[in-house]
Amino acid sequence: MISAIRSVLRAGFGLIERPFDRLFGPALNPLAQLGALGFFFFWIVAVSGIYLFIFFDTGIERAYQSVENLTQYHWFHAGVMRSFHRYASDLMVVMLVTHLLREFAYDHYRGVRWYSWFTGLPIIWLLYVSGITGYWLVWDKLAQYVALASSELLDWLPVFGEPIARNFIATGTLTSRFFSLMVFMHVAVPLFLLFIMWVHILRISRPKVNPPRMLAALSLTALLAVSIWKPAISQGHADLAKVPADVGLDWLYLPLYPLTTIWGNGAVWAFLGAFSLMIAAMPWLPPLRRAKAVEVHLDHCNGCARCAEDCPYEAIRMVGRTDGLPFPTQAQVNPSLCVSCGICVGSCPSSTPFRRSEDLRTGIDLPEFPLKELRARVVETASGVSGAGRLLVLACEHGAAAGRLEGTVVLPCVAMAPPSLIDFILSRNLSDGVVVAGCAESACYNRLGVKWTEERFAAERDPYLRARVPRERIATIWASALEVRRAEADIAAFAARVAQLPPLHMQSPLPKSIVAARKDRARADAGNEP
Ligand code: HEM
Ligand code: SF4
Ligand code: SF4
Image (cartoon, rainbow, N blue to C red; front, side):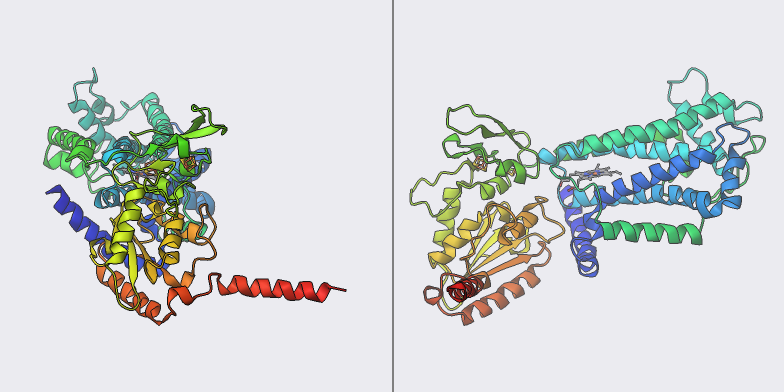
């Protein structure tokens, strides 16, 4: 049942995300930046909140008027800030809900990833408490409605000695002290929210907490346009002598309030409790089958720290050497953080399939799918591919090519394949071309697998693909599991191109650019001779 809902949602996200990829480019796709946008809107809320606080009168008598003044007399700065504050808060809810659904759809919440999911739950509560207390401060009719409904809801719980709803049912009963408590909560809860947001990303390496500049600029421009077009306004002074009727609700923050009247407060608490329990339990419904964590082989580890830098889950740290070898550090794996993606295997300098030894050993390896096994599968699969344009596909198990049978070796992540494996395949003439097929560029299952692969191929990251490897014989295809047809078409087109190339053994071992550069240098040297 859960996996059926996940598949439907995943298909839904796929349908929206791929056109977004084309529209914005994978790097700017907002759906791949939801957490970062959440942080971005938080900062906008914080800065605009501080600005508003300068003009806000925290006393119950003058609070409403001080906010009204912003909209009426200072609309061009404080009024705009008020709208920024409200709309950025709304956008935080939009980001939160979409981000939650997306992490669920992509199955990013079970196994080792339970931690980020679980710490998302207090974020939901704290964000809502922050928003709801914000609505009280305006002290208009909506504030009165929210205050009354919230305190009745709280009074249902047997925790307060005196019913707090009493404060809001007659004039003169609401004390300034109570109002100041709300002001304090509206400042303290968001601060705590920020702390939990930091806790939320603790187990993620290089978390995206800032959206790309262009996306940030676009979001700010959109916020400014909406703030001028439809400024945030109040709904008339609160009047405790009258029960507020016909208030306009913010459906993002207050969707449950009408339900307190329809269902009753007890049922709303039951709903909130069940929802929270469900979110908290989801990572174990059912638990993800976990492959064994990677193991470090100290006799092949020189302490270079590449694996620790590349691991997307902070599962490796460098510690002092324990085996007496002449290196200051060694890699140490925390098995409870490792998702067995194999990315570290691909980054280790000892992962060289060229080694002759049958028992190919590397510095860090997956016990259930060691590098030796990967090399054996590559050699075996290649021997079954024939004809013009023989291709070997290294496919990520989460991407579009995972289901291909012919000439495909499936890996937990494409970045598990060290670049030297591609060198090995082509230099040993195992195939005429190599396809590296991973997840969609903006939705890498292992967060950084696509990025690291691209950087290694572009010689921007160690271990890089050597210059001698003919680039025209390598294709990278980034396509989600829903884009099988596109991936198949791209692979077929690449096979046709490779078939036109001269046989591998007739090629110059050096790329043309390097040969040309060498000739130029030789000519220049000759010209400099006396
Ligand atoms: C405003 C609220 C939130 C913010 C600002 C936020 C922010 C972030 C950020 C920045 C990341 C790292 C993304 C990356 O670099 O790959 C992340 C990851 C994650 N978030 Fe949130 N988050 C929020 C709410 C939630 C909620 C409510 C849930 C679910 C209950 C959730 C679940 C997750 C999960 C499961 C991951 C890990 C993804 C992975 O391992 O690839 N988040 N979040
Ligand atoms: S297998 Fe993946 S998660 Fe585990 S240590 Fe290596 S890079 Fe990190
Ligand atoms: S990449 Fe390999 S050699 Fe470098 S620290 Fe990690 S295990 Fe050791």
